[in-house]
Length: 446
Image (cartoon, rainbow, N blue to C red; front, side, top):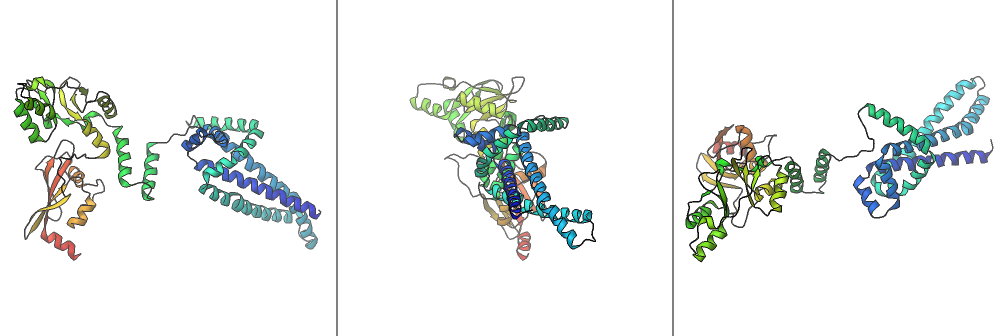
């Protein structure tokens, strides 16, 4: 074989190596590229993105195209190497060592040549292109889309045949559509976790998105203020009495009932009461009532939010299946399920952890329910770690095994006591923690 033939064979193998690299890079680039990004590029008018969208609609066609291309260049390079290098090399070795059979030399040379080609193609045709494509997925995917489409067009009959077989086999395993690509809630949670660890999003942002997922699973019954905790004003009250009760409770509005809580006559607003008293027109509560809005306790929270917003309702009366009043729900209650507790300008800002009593033998701390166990451990120098919960309010609920009431006391290891001093129907607002001085001293010595 002439030197020109050797050069041409090497060029063919190098060309096959380049094609293999392009195919490997396009595969990892396509897999790494987000489907929503492809759709965005299509909307922006990128023609190669349309090809990617076509492949994303049936991924079996894409992977079959890649496999056909890789198989073809692999077969081509092996055939060229065998004809151009293996046979001449075997003849040359046999002339030097005539005692060794040609079949043995052929087997050894074929194995060595296969290993050499495999290493070259693995490094320069797979690993390097894939690593580069992983870091430039969008650019590589768009650049190679047209090339892949040409291969797909060339091998279309075979690709269609093989894809049909693949889809048929997958259906036996209960996978009906290879093209289906659905992002699950768990996928998004995992991405948020990764984003937080990499500093892309804040913990508060992650928790808010988590709350939105949970929000969609809740019903009115999960977040409303139940009947035993319901603040309401009897219709027999005077305007002055109603104003006093509203001011004392800290509420700006309240239901007004007749004979009992099942007889809700309307909603009273503090500004209407003040206006009526100021004008002194001899009005009664009945004259300034706003029409009540009723919703079932089984409604999804999302539906309740949408209906209350559409009807411009801030407070709704919650009823059960028999029409009995179960409680109330406000727009604030609903929004707090997403953003956490909402404080207005009249709420007094308090220290999350403060000392309320101290003697020679113990220290009493008043702690807000949302304070994390980690912060308590640092501030009070006591360990309340529990893998099940994150906050002191959650810790109390977990230890009691029920929703706590004001006055509930929990004793834990080390002589530490926790007393619930403020709680409503849905959360623990404040807890008093009594820590013996010997406990604190022991922690310091450690």
